[in-house]
Image (cartoon, rainbow, N blue to C red; front, side, top):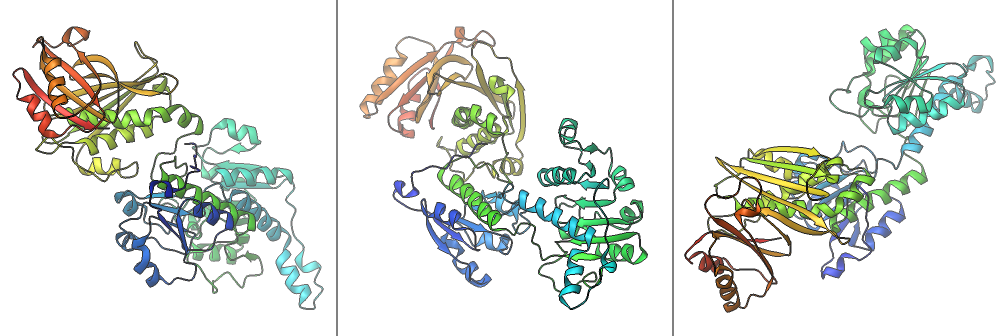
Length: 557
């Protein structure tokens, strides 16, 4: 998605939301938040302070030291955004936040340069024994021969995890004349070729040739304990190991044993199993270089992380596009630019479809994206269809139920309710450049609605409902009626609306003959009416009491 940071403060709505900056970040991020919200700084708050006060805040900006767990989330009924000034979100209970509809966003681009540079710094320090030689010399010793090192030139660097940081490390290593081989199955062969890096078919291919082995993997269940005895046994004798990613990727006791045996000639570690840590079995080793998690610790990265996380909080709380949420589909900028006009339409179609279905519960939601919109990454549109469906379900009296649902929790809420979700896409569409079809099923009954956007201002239009075709621009208040197609019906509806002081914006009728496929054999027509104000349920009931009407719904778009 492309980030849009609205310039109009939240105060324009009459109330300013509150955001807590729980840990110290760069001033630029704090200033950005202050332009939109009331901001409190809680740098010195204890955990008890945070738990007691979190209920007042709509958003919170954190680094790695604040744990946003389920207990804290349950104590924060207003919380709608968590911004993590950094890459990892290990300190946030993302599933608990998702269930509550809280956006969790990080700053994945903020420290990639800093982390890559620190990896290279440790690579050189380990190869040339820089910290050991410095400590020796400053203690009054001249031990030149003791700290002879190895060159990087024509050595092979093995990279496990070839994402943003791994690729930056590779570029810098190539500058030293190193051979680079990497393993990451999701990175294209073209990207490897572009960087001049050998693409390994398996991790074992990396272990077999690497003189230096660096880890740039995320911490997930599959990677915890990655560098263990079995892996180290597959490595070249005398390999040197670096970890500037996550401490749990390495099994400490296995690395200690490999260094003791000489299998591993050296190690450089910036991260550890638990932090902070001042005692570790490798801290006393002469061939091990350690730093206290400095991979992201530069003034530039700190300022960048705080600002990027603040951008995400602003977007989440003001209706902008959150680009780095870990619990919302991340859409490429070019796709987001093309799809943004369809977000509101998708939500509206979901609402209308859910309102038209007669069954007590919704069993399945099918969405088809056709034409230009079908050629894009339309996951976000699918989520917005679900939002509309879940928010548009009707209660017993025909009124729309109010569901606290958003892009974050819509998929999980649908799953919890047993709603089957299916999506299809095609770059071909009839009659219109772009079409979205939404079909909602309850038991044996299905209802389909179809829509598109039209014109330079991308006005949303409803094209089909209740088996009839028409073209009507969607407004905030929409009413739909199904009735036996006889003369005089439109006038009767207008009369009742007028008697209640309801001004009609537009109206259109779809007849059975308008539909090429599946035309209504019962002689029913569908009328769509947009109004300037809401239509009360009592007015709908009054219209349905007229002979010939079989169904009526009013929907707030």
